[in-house]
Image (cartoon, rainbow, N blue to C red; front, side, top):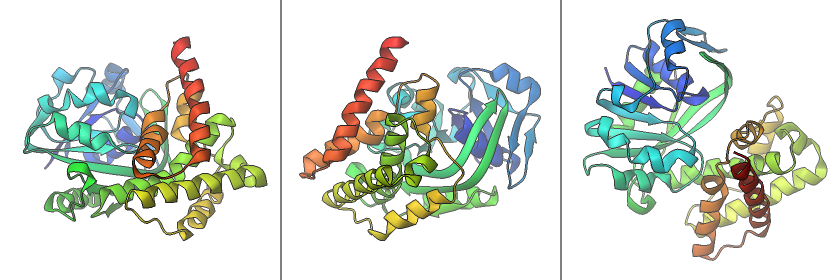
Length: 313
C-alpha cells in the first residue's frame, strides 16, 4: 500500500486522508493543533457517502515525527507555501510525489524547484463542500471529486502519465471520485472560473453564494468576472467554453448557501489566499496582454482588507 502524509489536516486533508486510511493505506496526518486530542479520540468523518471513525490514527504535530512517504498530500492554504515547500523533500521517498491540492495558480513551480529531480508534482483541485466542525470532526456535505494533473515546467502539457493513473486508481478504490487531466493549467483555469468571482465577492460584499446569484446586480458582477477570467485564460492559451458560465451558475443555484474558503478565512480573522486566487492570475493576464478591469478593481479592495487583517494579528 502507498504511504501518504497529509499536510494541513483540516476539512480537505482530513476528509480525503481518512478515506485513504480507511482503504488500508498508511496515512500520517500533520495537525497544526489538536494532534494529541485526535490521537486519543480518533478522527470522525460525517458524510452522506458513509461515516467514518478512525480510532487508530497517525496524528502528528511535528514534521520530524513523519516517516518518509510515497505521496505528500499538501492541502495547506497557499499563504503557507513558502514554508511548506522547503520542508517537503525531507519526508518524501526517492521518486515520490507531491500532490498539491490548492486553489489558484503558479504554486506547482515553486514546489518543483524545491524537490529532487526524481520527484513528481501533481496539481489537484477539489470540488467538495466540507468543514472541520470540531477538534476531531470533519463534516462532508456534498460532492467530493478531485481533478488531478501532472505538472511539467512552465505548465507544459504533461499528458496522462503512469503516476496519474496510479493515483487515480488508489483514490477510486478509497471511494474518492477522480478526474484525470492531461493539461494541468487548463484544469486550474477551469476551477478559477468559479473561484475568482465567488471567493472574492463573498468577502467584499459579505455575502453567501446564494445571495450573490439571487440578486440581479451581483449576479451580473459575477458573470462579468467570469467572462474576464475566460479572457485571461484564453490569453494564457487555454480555452474555457463560454457555456461553462451557465453550467457553474446552475450548479451554484443547487447548493445550500455557502461561504467559500476565502470568506471562511476572513470570518476567522486569517489572511486571505489573495495572491494565489487573484494576484497570480492577474499577473499572468498582464504578461499576456489581457484586460481584466473588474477583477483588478476587486483585487485592490481585497488587498486593503487583507492588509487590515495582517495589521490586526
